[in-house]
Image (tube, rainbow, N blue to C red):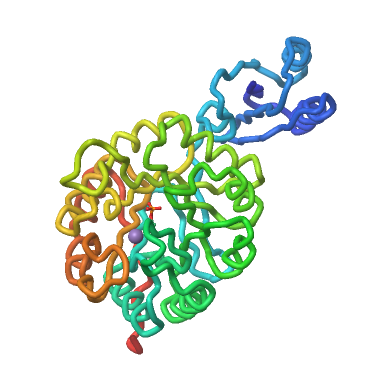
Length: 353
Ligand code: PEP
Ligand code: MN
């Protein structure tokens, strides 16, 4: 249920509405616009008696029932788009969900200190604003490279220190959340874990923004309900990443479902990220899908880039080489301009770089 406050409502009227909601054992989530406020009511049961009491309160314009199963994730609850501020504590905060589109780049896995620092410098020189790299890798085969774990997190932190760029990295189990959250600026939930509800609750309580990838066989509603777990655990800063779904097609690794960009933005206020790397599995298809994602209205891209894709320990076939990545950035600018947006840029590297 949503309580829409009348324009020009008084603060004590809003406080009274919240107090009433809490007094009947429900939770209130407030969203403010320029002159309006909307109070989302969460919990069960929301009876007709509660609805009627709220309708009669001073300052209340109307009370609407929300039939969707996800509440905090829905546009009805939160009409304004969410803008997530990443890493304010590092002084180079990046905003995701605003006018500027953020490009996150880096190798699939953190493989070595020298290799990752090289990739980080190349990503920054090309204009990326966030660094990606997996330290805990979910691999289909247990015999493949599964990441450097804490050593990988330390390398990520070193790269952040050197480049000034915040880092995004995956966390795979609830037990690892405190460790990964100590290093990461954004916690990534991978496609394979997107319905691991205990993990979703653990990252939701970790105090860091979360990027939730779409599972390989997840419907939009299931995806938004997964986001709801994170939101309901206390994290308001959730972004949704489309990374391709399983279809009958085998010429690509996955089928990148770009229709999710306008669909999710209609249903939800959460920023949408596109991963054209896992979405196609083929480096030569990545630039076109990255450009298309910007045209479709994505708020951010996450792109795999490796100094030597042929030697990558994971996902080399879909990783751009640094020159191709650098060449893509100004082309993204042009498409962004065409749709009334821009591509966020990292601060210009100093002469010491
Ligand atoms: C990754 O980002 O490297 C990754 C493992 O992604 P996904 O969970 O989408 O497969
Ligand atoms: Mn990968």
